[in-house]
Image (cartoon, rainbow, N blue to C red):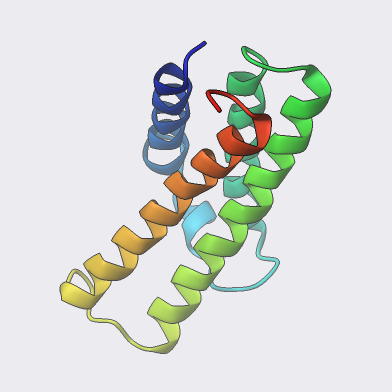
Length: 122
């Protein structure tokens, strides 16, 4: 599979996991380190990443990079929620959207990192 196809699949899985399969219990405690909802949400990302990566690598590496995605996703979301909650960003104001955009950019860069570490297209 080419890099463009892989990044497209990872972006699609991100859309599903971040927007279609994220439920209130998942986002309510993301700013609490170790909160069950944030852990469940990042776990969904890791599992989906595992399934996408099985198309291009061994099951062992797919598991490792699924775990990496979960860990990075969890900490990116925690940081975003912690900043939002502790610095009282007005909901849907400029600062909120900059924070949300940075969060999404870091998630996409996680997928770039995974592709680079796998050596796909290099």
